[in-house]
Length: 177
Image 1 (cartoon, one colour):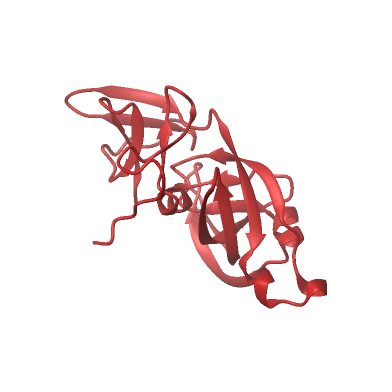
Image 2 (cartoon, one colour):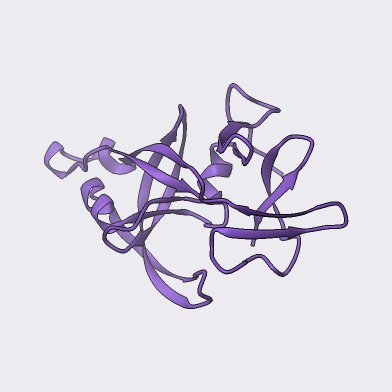
């Protein structure tokens, strides 16, 4: 599992292996980081990002079978692994069910969720293609670590926003090895 790690010199969070076994402090959104140099507890769900969503298969479908494009705000949460959307957005996109997965939630429970896909997601001009985990009707969309990494976004807790990778601010730069 990967969680965010604070890098003081850059004022951004980077995805990294867990720093301590106390990753959860009462809720999914409260993270604890402990090391010899610092100890920080931060609420990562303090901001949202606007996302544009499309059914990737639309390009191959007849007009009457295409899903609509959706623009919404998503909670930015590096503790969430993937993109998770409420069923009403999945229905508007007309995504196909692909699979089911077992997930664990902040309360420690394990649950089976349906997986849909594939969605093209755009955040501030950067795009990627990911699967979607279904959330209950009315839930807030979650933008997790997988799409954030694929679009090469970092989280700035100080500015409470997504920032491009300082190594490649104009375009995503992904590690291949």
